[in-house]
Image (cartoon, rainbow, N blue to C red; front, side):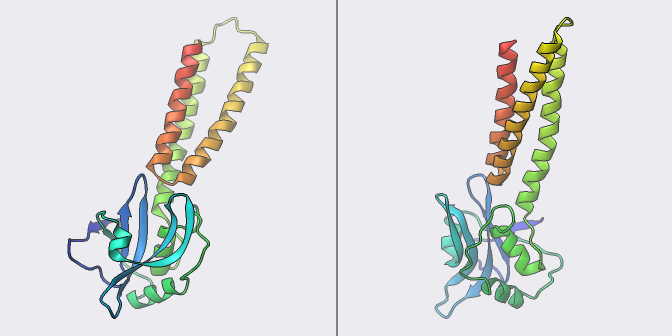
Length: 206
């Protein structure tokens, strides 16, 4: 989805979908406009931004939301709801404490307010990358194991190897799920790091 940088000393338009890049993931919020005191306000889900606490849907000033980082505005070619209605929709959930990184994160909220459905490009990207990485690395792992096996390997040894593959696969899928939960490049990097180190250790044991 296309985005552009918000120019310094420039305010977004009411109903804009804002996001900033944090350590390993993006954080999102919907711009509400300015209050009577001239404060620029953003509604966002404060989930997993303060240590590991899952915060509520809350209102913050724009500077607090940005936290010194560059603010981006996501563009929508067609918006299902008007900018005013987007704000009202988001405000109708103010104080909600149902944050879920998979199905109800800060990006889901913004897309829901604007388009009416829960969608997170960040989660979709992680799922796509992990889905591509897993079968590829697993195939390499099994292929290398087959090529290095001596021709006179006993049936018992082959069964033991198959059992080890099954155990590794179970652990592998668990770590893959954990990477998805992390919802960002950090989780993907951890997953790939595990797969690479696992293969390296196997090669050292042969």
